[in-house]
Image (cartoon, rainbow, N blue to C red; front, side, top):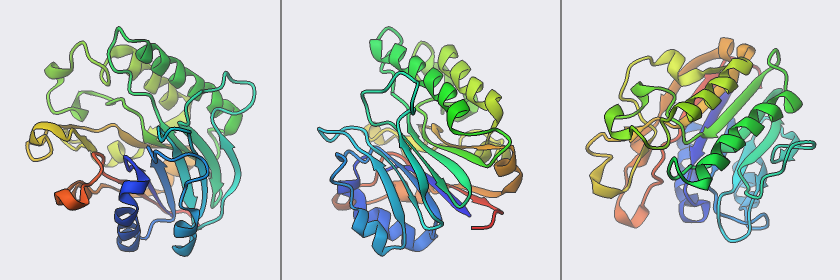
Length: 263
C-alpha cells in the first residue's frame, strides 16, 4: 500500500499537477491538505475517474480544507475531532478507514508567532488531536496520521536552527505536543528510514529558498506499530516542488511511504 501526504496549497489551482503526479506514482491512499475548497466544490468526479473514492472536509471562503482519497476502499469517514471533543471552526482534520488502515489527514494550524492567539490555538489543536486518537483508533491497530503538521520535529528538520529561535515551528511546546502524539504509539516513518539532516518538504516561495536549500520538514506520515513494521520505503518528492511560473507548484512536496500491507 502506497500512502501519500501532500499540502497542495489550492487543489483548484493544482488539480492538473495532482492528476499527473498520481499517474506517475500510482498511490493507493492520498491525504491532501489546504484544498482551499468548500465542501461542495471538491472535484470528486476527477478522482473517481482515476479510481479513487474521496472524503473531503471543506470550509466556506476557500480556506483550509483536507481530504482522504483511496482506491483500496473508504469507510467510516469523520470530519474534525469527532464527538465529545471541542469542535474546530476550521476544516483541518478528516478521518477514514482505507484498506484496513485508519487514516487521518491533518492540517495543523501555523501558529504565526509565539505571542499570537493562533499559536495558543495551535497548541490546543494538537492536544485535541491526541485525545481524538484515543477515540478514533487503537495504537495496536493499523493507524496512519498524515499531513502538514507545521512543526519541525527536531533541529535536523530545519536548514538553520539558529534562525528559528523564538519562532513557531520549532518551539519547545510545539515539539512537546508532537512528542505526545508519538508517545501514543506512532513513529515518524520517513525519519526512521532517513536519519540524515537537510531533507525538507516545504520551502518558502520568497527569496529563492528552494534553490538555496532553505527549507523545513513539516509534512509527516506517522504510523502505529503495525504500520511502522510494514514500512519499506519513504520518499520526499523534491522534484514536484519545481515548475515554471505558468504551472506554479505548491510550496510543499509530496511525502510517500510504501507499506507491505495487503490492499
